[in-house]
View 1 (cartoon, rainbow, N blue to C red):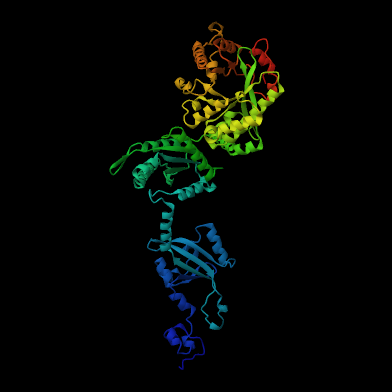
View 2 (cartoon, rainbow, N blue to C red; view 1 turned 90 degrees about the vertical axis):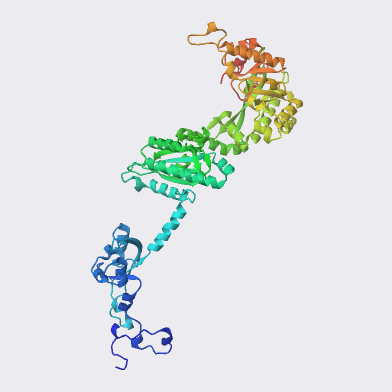
Length: 633
């Protein structure tokens, strides 16, 4: 033979493989041409099989046989889909059928395969069409078949590495518990419709806990000890969860969400009782001290408990409720669990809505003042008025001060709001003075919060307001609560003295219910005591004989009030009684020597124009005449 052939050379006629260096020297003849499809297929390091149009294996290479632990020849005639588990889920099976029909160019998926020896492996399976034999062209390689090429790559090592990396990513290194990411992944999966439509209870619960005072452990003993304590807590929580395992849903998932916060997720919960029992068990598990080498540490926890239907619940909403409930447990005294209360949460949401709109409401002019008369007990004439703020909220209607003043003090908006109240009240008092020049001018009493004293230059604000309005200083009275005034030192006391020296009257509001430090009272620049309404409410009847069946007069209240009035007068102070509602109360207060009264007997808080009707008016019954002059709105 001269090395040429009239036909294509067979695989057995091929000579030795030509190396790259040999190829530079020797011409490429037919005998040194490219290898045939069959030889490449057989020797390929990638596990492969040819599949016909019916989905049956035509041939498989040695690599596939080795991968599956079987003779490759035995694979011929096998159903390819069963061989590599393509029919186990509907999506993959449909895609495979589309490739068989030529409607889809390729299928690639990852499957878990079982070898003949029983061992499993993860494989990446690829199915794609092969070129028809008629398309071999000049190569004349007649053994290229049609159908599909099935290739299988062992990715077990890669999957194992991915699993290890995911475990590290989804677990806390200190406690080895699932972390926040894994917790929310499980929570999201538990709330998906399919998870509770297949025979579950359709409910879910969370115990969200925070260690009480853990920061002190870190600050005192260091972060290393703190981490060891967290790990010990995690062990107890895990045991607690295992003991609470339910036959249907298994043990709750215990996760560390960050810092000293942990959560227990209960899927397919059976109701609030199950979560309450779990929370109680958690608190009991944390009670025994923790022995950490040479240290003995004790720690408690506060737990927020939420249990509800999964339908309509989102992970964010559930955890917001849990976080809110945990805050309640902290606020209620710590070392306890608290169950989520929708009504209490609605109140909290309302407070947040009010707090968020307080400052803009000042700028929008949503606030207004009403005035309640302060009436002389002796003659029934109006001596002054107390300015009481109202918020005309666009959503919640007219709000009394007790709905928003505490919020204003918390976020500091009480300072601009207090300036507005002071300026508005002084302007109105000056208008009354100018409108009734023949009547003695009435004073206006304005409530002042402690934060106004600390966070603003109250003395400068008052001086500027009096100058702008033209109101005399003695016609302005500032009221502070007893708890705010008693024990005042430093800046607050200096402010009160400066205001008093300016000529402004200082009144102690709700006197008799707070500190009641009588020794300190004499050293304060106070001119008025306003007795708390709790004492006046004890004055229900003029005498015990007037009390009806089941009604008991309280003479002790009268004795206490009389003693306080006498004490105040000896100190040079005047006394105002709050919450005067009946003529009997007014008569007894007048007999005791009380100077002025305030309450619904005389008038509820009213608009400025209705105060004008009272000025200069004293009815035949004294205070009763004042009531008739204003009316009872």
